[in-house]
Amino acid sequence: MAIDAPTASAVDAPADPASGGSLQAIEARLEHLERLVASSRVDPNRMNLLVFEAHRDRLLAAFVMATGAAACGMEVSMFFTFWGTAALKKGGPQFGKKSIVERAFGWMLPGSAGATKLSKMDMCGIGRALMSREMKRKNIADLGELIQTAAELGVKIRVCEMSMQLMGIRREELIDYPNIEFCGVASFVDEAAAANTTLFI
Amino acid sequence: MAIDAPTASAVDAPADPASGGSLQAIEARLEHLERLVASSRVDPNRMNLLVFEAHRDRLLAAFVMATGAAACGMEVSMFFTFWGTAALKKGGPQFGKKSIVERAFGWMLPGSAGATKLSKMDMCGIGRALMSREMKRKNIADLGELIQTAAELGVKIRVCEMSMQLMGIRREELIDYPNIEFCGVASFVDEAAAANTTLFI
Amino acid sequence: MAIDAPTASAVDAPADPASGGSLQAIEARLEHLERLVASSRVDPNRMNLLVFEAHRDRLLAAFVMATGAAACGMEVSMFFTFWGTAALKKGGPQFGKKSIVERAFGWMLPGSAGATKLSKMDMCGIGRALMSREMKRKNIADLGELIQTAAELGVKIRVCEMSMQLMGIRREELIDYPNIEFCGVASFVDEAAAANTTLFI
Image (cartoon, rainbow over all chains, first blue to last red; front, side):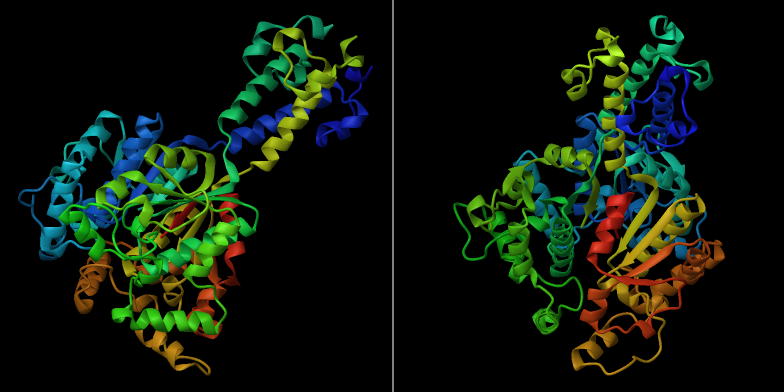
């Protein structure tokens, strides 16, 4: 009976369907498939957003997507790097002993999410103010509310340590956000490999 | 015979290959794998492009990718949001009763795809005109032709309702495109979960 | 015996687990699953970066990610298109017979990776120089070193032929990089379908 006499070839390669596979041959194919599925497992319900820019419009897009996805039950992680790092500052005076170049970064970059400019039509703040008013009038959540919602929905925020080091931003200068993490590019890469959707914003 | 006497442990965990799995144990593993594959099903032949900017160069990139992918047999969906929404206007006068801020958006944003500026070297339209001439001379399809081709190849276009509401853009102001849809962030998130490739442009 | 008498329904649909599937029914399900897994195979360890912009900050981000991912054992491919193409020039005089428009592109676009500007705070090169000094002082690899590391780690570089044609850039003008390839959008689309992570930078 076939079950008792599997051939080596049946174990190595998928058996010819017409040949009437034995139980052992089927088991071998099943194992192969299990390994394949385990190795290529990408989670469609995981979203990974790399926030590179600190423009108000891009931050709005990032947080609308993050909160929208989290509300749909997805696991969302945001990685703030380069200019994006500055958008997480809580505002107020600069902390600690900084070099003159680090202080210059502090003056030129947005001091907080609320101080970020639109990438276009900002017009020294007029465009920004008009858009905020328009969002309020139309019941569209503004950046501050979206960050709050993201925290409530469990959106994970991670900040690039190299960017903080480069721009001389201290941890104490960043907003209070539950379980905020500080990490490097390897951590981002791991998340990108695990999540189906990764966006560069 | 093994087929008649499966053990509970064989059902819970993958059977030891050397132990000679029973038919029922194999069936349990198969079912587990089927559920796993069904839950993590991401389509490699599905591309999802989020068009955030309204710069001519980015729109060209978006439509070159969309038509290229569709020509390769992929299922392509484009989601226009924020500034990108304005690029879908067909030009001409603004429709309907609008607030003064909505009218201001209309004046400052591009009036149509043909009126979009390059993100750099636009030089009040000189760079743009030179690039269009160069594309024609070298037989590279321009934006208008690419949108037409996208329609013919069945590229799906969806527009973010929140952006239209925010900027006061009416449906009647948008280009005629087959089966254009209006939807929210949840619809984008669903597409991102189903498609292997999602880009933020 | 069940093995000899499979029913058509068992082949068409997953068998009811309680019904005690036959060997042939199980084989049919296994084959179906094998085809499904083969057709949806996306490699989580493959990263595909589309470099569209030629700003120094974005190029840094792209190469930090590329080298970081390659160092983690991922297979990384970069596709340079539009403005990004100009960042791969090795500098020096323009080659060959060019039209006046092509020459103009050559004057206005960055002449090499080392000549790329920051997207903000460049201040005619002051911001750029300060950032480079700061990176050196803090032992953060600069663009030139990152490109070298990418080459050593086997990061693949492909350049969009249409962009080169449009901007009149000759192959001899590009940096010497191991196995640099010249290709079209179809090649990018194929890579996007095979890689789990594709970013538009």
